[in-house]
Image (tube, rainbow, N blue to C red):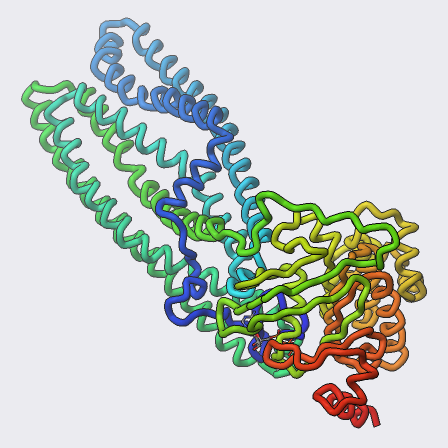
Amino acid sequence: MTAAPGTEATTKAAPGGTAAPEGDGPGDPFDQDLLPAPRNAQFALLGSLLAPARARVWLAAVLLVVQQAAVQVGPLLVAYAIDHAVPALRAGRHGPLIAVGCAYIGCGLAAGGLQRVFIRTAARVSQDVLVDLRGRIFRHAQSLSLDFHERYTSGRLISRATSDVETIRELLNDGLDELIEVVLSTLYIGVLLVVLDWRLGLVTVASAIPLYASVRSYQRRSMAVYRRRSTATAAVIVKFTETMNGIRPVKAFRREEPNDAAFADLNHAHYRANGDALLEMARYVVGSRLIANITVAGIVVWGAYRVAGGGMALGVLAAFVLYLRRLYDPIDRLGMFLNSYQSAAASLEKIAGLLAQAPTVPEPEHPVPLPARPQGAPPGREVVFDGTRFAYRTGGEVLPAFDLRIPAGQTVAVVGATGAGKSTLAKLLARFYDPTEGRVLLDGVPLADLARDDLRRGVVMVTQEAFLFSGTVAENIAIGRPDSTRAEVEAAAKAIGAHDFIAALPDGYDTDVRKRGGRISAGQRQLVAFARALLADPAVLILDEATSSLDIPGEQAVQHAMATVLRGRTAVVIAHRLSTVEIADRVLVMRDGRVVEDGPPSELITASGHFADLHQAWRDSLV
Ligand SMILES: Nc1ncnc2c1ncn2[C@@H]1O[C@H](COP(=O)(O)OP(=O)(O)OP(=O)(O)O)[C@@H](O)[C@H]1O
């Protein structure tokens, strides 16, 4: 047995359900949101996400280049109207003004049409990227080994897949086109200004130097703030999900108030990080507007003197001022873009760190098939622990040089004090972990060499939490063998003795286990888990027997079901009940990661060893 039910696969829960990730100390990367990744992994990730949409990205870029050209013609037309169409009008010629008006409307329509196509193309690209990214996070998180999930909490994973993906969505949907637009319009306008009047143009271009410095300093300062904000967001999500996951211990230990206080602290830290981010943004906007306004004022004054002196046409000055507005207006939006860029960069870094984690229990490169069972051989398969040593990443050695042979078809009950290493033995046999040294063999084939499908068919572990997924009772049983028919599902349930209670549910086998009326008791959940295992029909079944005290009829039903599911295969039961030990062919007593007694139950009971003492204690507890 390991942690409290429901927490086994994530973390060891502290009282109150506020699970703390286990770490190697202050330097443990798993204490941080940011996991170690190769340099520039985030750019490689972005590149690989955009690669399938390369053609669309180019199309969007070309559309934007043409669209911006159409947009930037406007002030030139105004200059032409002031300097040429108005004098022509004074001379009685209407043609130039009508031509300018039509050209203005034409450019506006073209820009609008192109923008529409661009938005649709960009939206497709960003949707594809997001779907791909979410899928990659889910698939990768699922493929990572149990030791990863025990250290990196599920709350953090959720925040990677939700809030981090969301910030990337914001960048892709609202920020990226903004940046390209700003860069393009700056280029167009810069060239047009120098062409219109090179002296004033150069002054404007010179103003880019302090503006660039302002952007760079904002970027530097805000990166740290955005990292902090994204970590604070994740902390809020982690606290929320972990508290709700552990709502039972929260209630049992009356942890509501301390939890409220802890959540309020995290919420406040998030508020402060958010406030700091906005403050940085405000500083940037104020600074860059000041630079822009000083430049505009200087140009208007100098330009006015030159117009008055006849060195410059009025229309050109008007176009200049219009262009300056267009040049400086996006500065605030550039800040907003940098804002979402910083958030997205921080999120992308975290997601890249997650995706860079390799499973510690990898699929074999050259899988070895399980040998066919000879005719007449006993059912099940032989299990051998061959010089197996094992230590969790966080902690000392749990199994020191472990040797064990379980012949095919044998039912072994494993008993021992808490922390003796029983669950660890079971998890090594289910290949949740690989041994630090030595091997675990199934009919002579190391588990590490078995293909995933062979391993799934070969070894099944039923944990005591008997987890039910959302869906119907029938679907939950069919997880054991997804291609099974309804008749096979019902046959398994009948064999286990679960049919009657399932038939009595509001919709029988089609009852949704998460909906009202579909709630089933702990003992019934165990029966569903047994039916699932029976349907899977593995060669080796590992059972982490529930310790929860069932009522007597419930206990009897579970005992009967257990006997059914264990029959005809190799079985390892982490036994907590006397009755379970009695149905075993062999009992292993474990202490400190070693087998200290090994034999049939009847022999061990009469001997004067550890098992006899345990047996006596059980008997006494039954009185
Ligand atoms: N995920 C883990 N990370 C680090 N140490 C662990 C982990 N799981 C178990 N341990 C440690 O390994 C040792 C053996 O634990 P194990 O769960 O195998 O014992 P057990 O015999 O099944 O005990 P119980 O009946 O209480 O579950 C214990 O000292 C435990 O603290």
